[in-house]
Image (cartoon, rainbow, N blue to C red; front, side, top):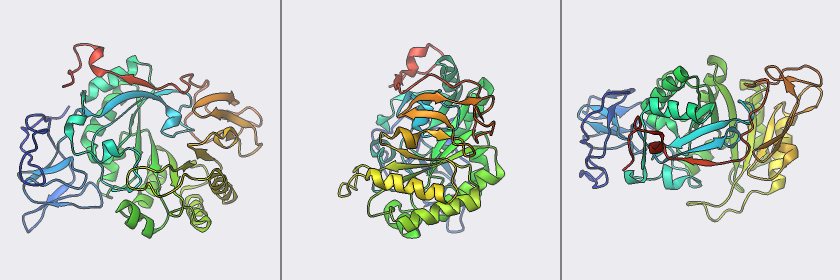
Length: 388
């Protein structure tokens, strides 16, 4: 647990919003530097926000206080819920097990299609009713039988200090941690952020600079750099999600280039989830992704050598199940988030031919199924802080 400081962070207009007064907590952050012109530059993500006194970054939760950058949401969450690990989505990381999921507020991207915009775009801190310190989160996850804790709903890069402390506490409690992230982080901050993380689903939103610039207000290259770093330089288990948006990133040539890049730079064993878009937030003029588009994307990926490609947000047992890349045995059957077939032994070896499937597996799958269970952290006893 980090030392808190008194909340003295004005809003963007120079005044302290009523929702923030006295609510805290605020903690010092890492990865920033003072500029010659007197501004403080945040170096957590490639936006490199340059802040005057009282200003906030685009993420809204990292702000300048004095001659430093502080995190204004440490210990606070938009809510906790136990999910199936497959919902993150992670198909090759402890299949069938429950994961304690939570997010905070804010985001360092500005995606027009954000499907969690009530959380990630929020500047209203009172939306964050759940409070818990890192040790309490690890303890509750363990008591609920969760094998992991997931930082999700909004990008954990922006609450790095809180996420890192939770990951450390979880590791001590025998609980793993999962980062669901857009991977938009600087070279400098990347090692610190992922140091204690066990698995990550990285949202590769498209494969053109145009898409990233116009639709997400960010850049593609830092995301590619994150993927290469994770696969080549860490032990973090990595899977990729690509949300396919009609008319934006669904061109077959783009999908071909993206999946070829994955195989060439990350190898054939990194799973890719092609997920269906539905109209939301500021992108209500686009239709839902056609089932055929997802099937074609998966076909292109497999043709390029991706061994494990999946469809998501649709009912498609055949394309959501896992198969041995050598003999074709259906190793894990999936109906949405419910597991059926399980033809793996030991640490993930195919019962048909003995080939080990890439991932993090145990002798038996979990049996959490498709359940979703909201968690009231305050109900776990006096060791946890009460919500407002």
